[in-house]
Image (cartoon, rainbow, N blue to C red; front, side):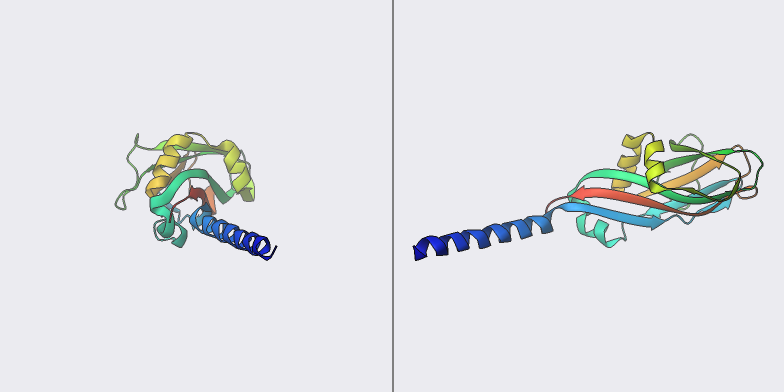
Length: 173
């Protein structure tokens, strides 16, 4: 009887240890990066580098998939009509804005007049397009972001702050 009890306890501890190791080896990770957007000649442009984030550094070689990429944007539209902006991504460059034609459109957002217009992460997920290209860029850890519109961005329309939120799954050691 004692041997069965001991064997059951040993099995339970072994199972707990295996589950704990499994939790450390795989998981889903979230990275939030501020977008340092700067208005340049009527558009916004910035570089995103997630390679310095701890979760990315720890798991970059074990990424199974990029699960979701979304934006969190606060904007002010001083025009009297709604403004449509395009959010584009491209390969990471060495500090130069994107060349025309090299970017991929991932969002088209319509922003009503007024201050403190907010596009939430959840809203952005419903608006995303060209996800395969975006996920391929994100998986490299570095990419460029550009926002343009038919109005003069930076004057009557401003992006007050922005974040990109990346969720990825990784497994391995």
